[in-house]
Length: 185
Image (cartoon, rainbow, N blue to C red; front, side, top):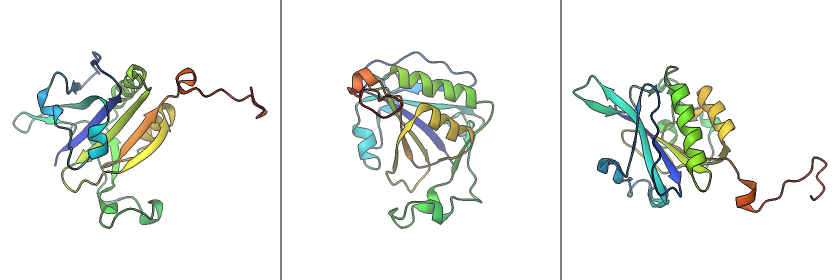
């Protein structure tokens, strides 16, 4: 089986140089293989402007490259049906298994997420995980970087889901901060 960890830095026009410890981060500008963004199976993800990055490393299977060495899943304990939204299409729930990042790669992946959110003009990334076959474009949105990273540490992210991760920039969004008492600023 093959695993993927893909991160789309929303609105970015030039890739950043990011060299995480223990694995590689490739981008679609410098690696033509990544330029194909699964337009047929992930149309919204594929049409979002920005630069696509993918995390992975080579492993001992004849020079294969991907996220397989970075993570795993628990196929014996899929997410309970009652913990999933009722609107999921039939047959999708059994493909939603936990994304478990191996501890030695967790700090590097956390750093990548934080750096790419900061590098995005929209302060937003799409964090997508996949394994072979059976894709259905599912989004879980909007989550702050801190909340997302906490869920990652706790093994509460799922494969075959795209997460909308953002760090709101009040000046860019035009939203004024409300005082603690709720009165207008």
